Image (spheres, rainbow, N blue to C red):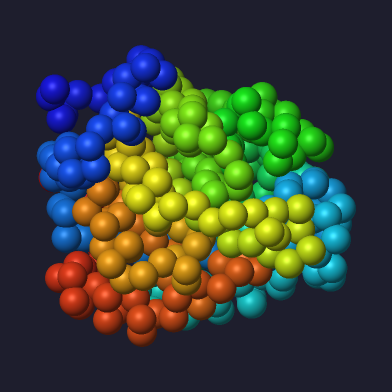
Length: 324
């Protein structure tokens, strides 16, 4: 199969067959596709800041920020613009080229839009790419963020449509797709992925990626998160996912969406260096840097730098898509 072919008509049968290839064949195919489109020794670095933490009205079973699931995380107000810009400057100095700002909302209120626009403009003035994740958006909100200069909007679909109601009941899978469509139609780049290890079946991991790979245009960025079990949430005691299954998920994402940045996201603190290296070989070419992801731990930058040095991996430059 031509590794340069970009398809949006993948079938479940094709995706399942790829996912279940002998592991070495799967990795070889994923690496072949990866090399056709990216420098295999470059990884994009993003930094994620929680600009509004806790008190969310949604009931996402994995999340400590939900006001419904018992995790007891107190709600905070929206951060001051100057604080956000200051943190972005530190992130840039630490090697991050994209700055992601996340708020624990079902959707932003109109009263907060001017502040959000100013954050986008301030971060862009530093020469960084901007990304926000604010929940569901209305058309006017999307336009305002676009006009402020927002580069990416993150809105994860979390899991398959089949399994979705087992994880979230306060919104529908269709709600997620609607927001992605609004963002895409407005001309903002799409960042959308999911979480694995939430007790789902293999077919749910395949279907999650298939949903993204059969959109009219593939997301420019697909974060793949390993569940971090949070005490007192409904998924606190879920059995951990087999690491090989996680790597298979990364490899399938790379093969189905050849020019997408596949981000090795939450859960890296529980991964060995060898597992992370295998994910990079399978086509992951983006990470979050810094010691915190919203409310969860993330590897220290020194640890990431040491791993990259061992692997001969360098950071992508700002504005570089890493493509060949």
